[in-house]
Image (cartoon, rainbow, N blue to C red):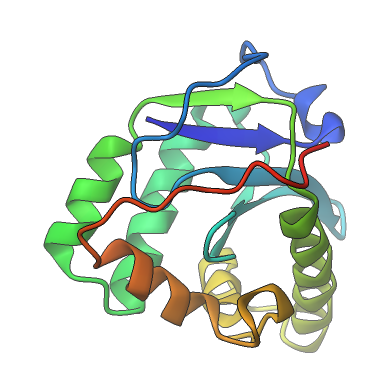
Length: 173
């Protein structure tokens, strides 16, 4: 099981029940945070892992299937950054069950805001980029909260280790 922390802006727009006190995530990657933003006139959702800042972009359309589309994009991206297939399958199986909540990690939100600016700049330069290509580019951006490591390196380290890592609860809003 995993937890998706939605910003208030996104929480108002999703048709899912929100959990006030979520249970701890059981997957290696832990919790994810999500927000909505627009690329031109197209509403999108940015979903960022709180441990690694690994980010997946999906279109807002057909919100009822957002989790399935997120998992599909995540699987493709994990393969792109050379995560072993067995690790991917194990993680995705743990993530099938999701709980939505309103709390969001401030550190993660700050990084997500930076990523949105990068997405808009990259799309402006290359309008033919797909959301998955843009997500892959975001995995190659050095991040201050990771001590200027790359999200792709952080996710490889977390997902391929056998020990379970936990997310700090500091910074929740």
